[in-house]
Image 1 (tube, one colour):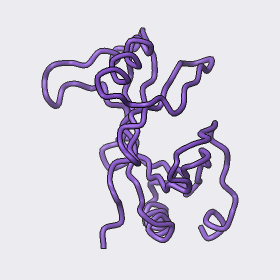
Image 2 (cartoon, rainbow, N blue to C red):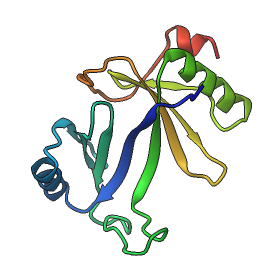
Image 3 (cartoon, rainbow, N blue to C red):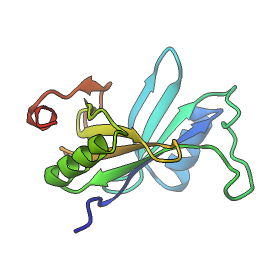
Image 4 (cartoon, one colour):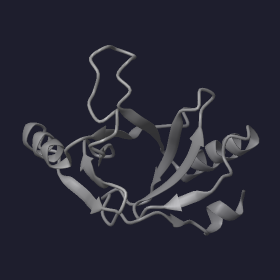
Length: 153
């Protein structure tokens, strides 16, 4: 059994969020499903498939806001997120990450998605997502998820 069903989202840093949105909505016809300006940055979620998202954050002064040309030297991908296909798979992954000491098991409720963060052995930030609403509507700021799944930890 495969415990993941694909990539949920890829997060990238950009110097110009408006240019980014224009390019991806025009060229690939990706709809904007969430957009927000926070005190720290502006960011957007673009639907890149039925359950895949491209997440861009505007940070004009960040050294990674422009992609570099050399493979494996690009540095502008911020983190990776994997989809868990079922709540059971999500719980199994969560338990394994807690057991390895790479996650405290805290789950963030983002609306249509539950999110669990950890760092891999190389220190890369990775998230596991469980889609609770396939329409991917109603994204909001992360909130602690305190229902049954978090109490099984």
